[in-house]
Length: 474
View (cartoon, one colour):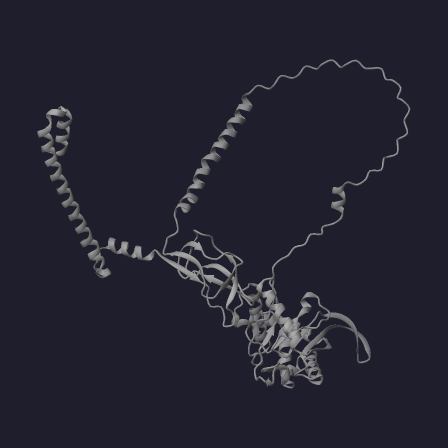
């Protein structure tokens, strides 16, 4: 007798006469329960021995479906992205912004955050593809090298729901347009079929009233003086609000370095004036040829860089520096020249380095300057691009500066400042002529350079610029 048959007979019989039936049903239930238990136990053993036993074997021995299941379970691992190593001298920075949001899918090596340091901005990229699970740091917080930044579900596939919705939306929009067009057409037809509204009957004109003589004009009373209200006084008093913005790390570092230079070096500036006629003519003759053959625009920075390299051969102390304790007790002379080129960016002044400028010609120097300038404007400079430097050239003339005194970039000894080209009357061979002139300013550390050496160096630069042919003979 099955369990269902026992239940039907038990409900049909009276309560006092069903004792034998209860015993039979109880025995049937015990047999059914034990059989079901044995069945589920066998299924459990078969499942564990089948799946787990095969899972412990090599992947090649698994069925394709089980291999996919095992690999999928392993791929959904949580990855924690940490603050990367930035440079030997940089141990912390500020998390400037997150490039993604929680729940966004990122590809491998895709940028997810930007860390601002006192020198450059460092991009944090995803080590592998996945979905962003949690941000562990807020924007504008200070982070250190090795600190946890973000959790990523590595291997998680991007959700396809958004893609399907994006594809289905245009299809739904099409019938609406058809409905609106059909409605407008039917409305136009109804307007055509509808009878024109009846013309209104012309009403009789009202009777003319007799005109009365106008009263004599009255003298206008003088206007009363009105005092300005408080709102008018506040609006005319001007805007006197103040804003306080925290300095970014680069600006803080620049301020620190400039103050350090002022407190350390015995800075002195010497000036000279250079006639730019010859170098401008030289550039005019060869700029198209250089652009066509080398793909770079020939400018003045390469000419001044080459002139400085040649002038350093006569005054090597310009390329030297002071090192040692208590302000320095050792002079370091160098056989190489690494020129720091000052570039103004939105975040501040950066000085990428043209390395081994002594072995370059003007075109090669111009190429290097162009590449570094583009990287600076695109905020893609690295620590290696700005490390070192033995001499700096700063061109304030591009902003219209007529004359200025640049500040030494320690531990360097000197910096050359270029300024705007202005047409001025000058005396040439006893005649007053108009020439394009530029002021040059050399700021130097008087602890290492004497005035004679500094002036000699600047005069040599002036001579090379006023006669570029000398640079071929030096």
